Image (tube, helix red, strand yellow):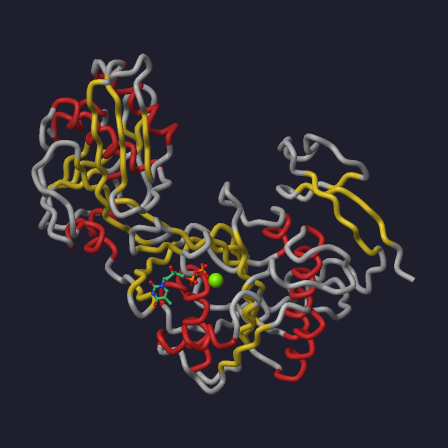
Length: 454
Ligand code: TYD
Ligand code: MG
């Protein structure tokens, strides 16, 4: 007989407690402990990470290496993010804001895989089979071996999987499915955890590549605790500005590949299309010869992308000036403003400053620093930047410009897009030869960079 135990679980981090607490002892969040009734009888262990069979320890030398087999989807951007394709038997979690296009992406992926002859099962707990069909009609995602099921009960889902034997499985979304033996509501921590570990077992034992769609909370984390992210093999975030058509698929965890890879898509009338030339797209609306606009060569994952960085510096009407950064880290912006004040002597304390990455993209790497410094200085002095300059480099606290990785690739991308000059760290110039068609200006300090650029 199953015993029902009551406990409290933090909805943010999954910390458990036998009694209610106002503040979570795990992540210090307030008011996040939620009551869960959990049946204590567990049929299997919570985690199975191997292939489900019993094995003896082996010497690492005797284990055959070789690449993981991959199922390549027709969507190259998705392949790139996953490190070359879907690994059979892997469990992938895709998170993102509501309405950003997760269901669209996965239906298109399902179709692409089904077209290659794989058996694909798309289980939706949010939309009816008809709604899914309507969407598939619109996307042109009709394929004989793409099966659709509208179901949330884990027992029925299991039966369907057993009878169909799919190669690829999509669960849209993990917050809607429930295990009847666990006595809490769908979407609760206990349910999400139980169902995820169940899919993990299925994926490993049966070798079914599985994608779970996860909702995100207000703060942008995948709902249901962080725990979920630890259990799966890959965590991908689908992100973008609602009012922009660009969507980025970003890997934040990948047991089979690098994590900082991004895939770029554009949402259109008939679904998502891949953006294979992101630099051209991101620069298409750029104004030329204005102050405050700089093009930065940023590397996202392994691919260089040229993006416009805009700054506006204007006199403030507030006692403490505003500092707003969109698409770049707020703290990096504060640092660069401090460097401009202290090392260059710009008086920015009476100025509001805004920094914005055009196109709704997020740039996370330090090579953006120098471009941010040039944009801010250009706007402050009202001195236009040259339209055919590209700038990149990390800025240190003494105002020095530090070397960054993949300088050669960044320069090549700039040359390919017809830029004439690159202002970059002189320390990154060692060990490679710049292409002939582009002028390289190596700088050691922010002050040198500003002299060259403005
Ligand atoms: P959806 O995939 O349902 O988002 P999610 O599953 O992440 O909640 O995408 C819904 C949005 O995408 C909706 O606002 C309409 C838009 N959309 C298009 O613009 N074009 C399309 O072809 C499709 C299918 C959706
Ligand atoms: Mg959806």
